[in-house]
Structure formats: structure tokens, C-alpha cells
Image (cartoon, rainbow, N blue to C red; front, side, top):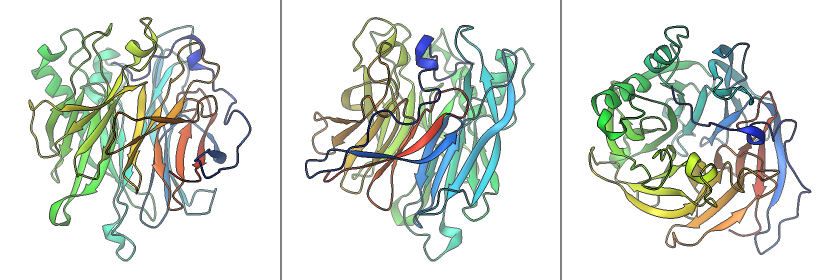
Length: 391
């Protein structure tokens, strides 16, 4: 069982009690950001998305229990109607915790990626689609804990009713990815089999058909999930060639203006633990109609530990960099903007202010909303609104 964030030392606890660092700045015409806390007291908030009605959905991975590993019932997804800071509903999920470093708090994994259709549900309730992906896989957790921990929600794709929060299981993605890496163990012999679904994207393809894609941070795969729950692997994200662990770790998927998929990678070890100055993460461009073993291409490079990504309505690619600044940073984390037509250009916002950002989404007011404290222990996370004068 390979958890996504193997944090060490101060990185695992730096955000405890910290929601937003530094004074908020007024936005000006040059795009200086203004930050404000929207919702606080969240337990490792990761995924965030908005639907066409402006409702904001936030996924919390949860908090750890006692012992080296186990499950709690502290994972959750909450819906916030536009302009409200109290959820209209909250749906609970299981949360897995695992201790990999006794000197640091346990890693916590549970509800992770969220995605909702941004159009088409204003008039028809049944056209609103909200998708959640949860971490790890049932067989992977059983194997890693020698049968001690059985999580029947691990690695599942859920559909959430936008009115009630009722969750419907749509696919066991984790088990399918675990089987894929078992059959293709030569791709990563030192680590496979493995699975850790983390990012999800729901979108409308040609002729209005709804399509769902999942990024698996453990299997390093991008899959399309069929209506029957089957996972079709469309791409294997190449591992880095110079890193200590050869583990690219795809964490997020965004649909570009060209209809292709753009996938960000974490590359945690290469960015933080082998003496490199960061900048080892990439964004891959993936054909949604491809099939493995078609190799995706690198679209942008020079990022650091990407955990969430999106395109805004002007075609800019945005990514959260959870550990930007490195292991010695007092407040690791940053947000980067890349113009679609100029992937070699990067503008950074939030360094020293946005602590351990998890994911990012554009709201109906054009501002960007970021989950922070996403790998902090306890209920020390928040959603932060970041507005710019022009972007």
C-alpha cells in the first residue's frame, strides 16, 4: 500500500492550526491576488469543484485514529450553496490512516478527487453529475495490512446526488487498477501491484455524452470509466528517469480547450528528498480516445509537487503545488498559472500564503478556490478564495 503523500518531519505538521498565512492584499489591475478564508475547520480537504448552479463541493480525507493503521468514519463530502458557508448536506465516507514514519503523523486517505459538470444542469436535475473518487484499493489495503484492514469503499468511484448527497457506487476503480498493475508488473517491478485513485474528471464529450476519467496515483494510469463500471486504461504516465523512486504519481486531470486531458504529477521524492531544487513535476497531454500503451506527451515542465489542476474560462491552466518551496519552507505551497498557448510561461501566486494546497477550482464569480491544509493532521484545513484583478 503506497500512500500518495509520504511527508516527513515538519512538512507533515506545518499547517496545524494554520489556515492562511500573511495579510490579505487587495487585488489590482496587475493581478495581485487577494486571499480570504471561505470555510475552515476541515479535515484534510482535498478535492473541490463547482456545478452549473454554483454549488461548491469539498472532499475531506478525514483524520487518523489510534494505532499504526486502520479506518475511521471521518471522511466526508459537503455541498455549499453559492453564498453559504454552512453545508446544505454532508455525506460521510471511511478514511484510511497509515503510519509510515513514526516521527510524523499518519498519512490519511479517503475521499479525494471531485468533479462536476459545469453546464447542462440548470434546468434538469438528472443532468447534474457530481463524481467522487476515493483512495487506495480494497485488495491493496488487505495485502499491505495482512488482512487486518478491509475498506469496501477504497478506490471507488461514486456518483453524488447534488440535492441530497446520496452516494451511489459506480465503479471499483482501485481493484481494476490493482489487477492491471499485477498483470503489468514489469512497468514498475519494485512497487507493483499498486493502486491509489486520486483525481477524477467528468465532462461531456462529442454529441453530449458524459465521460468520466480517473488518475491513479499508485498505478500511474489514466482510465476512462464506462457506464458498466469498467476501467479502460488510456495512458500510463511515464516514470521519471532521474528520480530516486521513478514514481511520477499522476494526481489530477483537467480538460483543455482542445478537448484533450492535461495530467499533473506529484514527483514527491525527486522534488523534495534527493537534493534537487524542485521543479521536477510535469503536465502531460493525453488523448482521451487513446488506449494503453500509447505514450502521452509532456506539455509543461518545471512544476513542483502538483496535487490539483483545472482550466479557467479563459483557457489558463492552474495547478496547486503542495510542497513548493521545499522541505525547509516555513509555509510550503503555491499556485501556478500557465497560459494554454504558452506552456513555457509560469506565473506563481500564493507562495508563503497558501499552506499545503490540495486542489483548485474556478467559482461562478471567476475567482479561484483552493483547499489548503490538505495534508495537515486534525481539522486544520480550509477553503481559500483567491481573486485577481485581471488574469
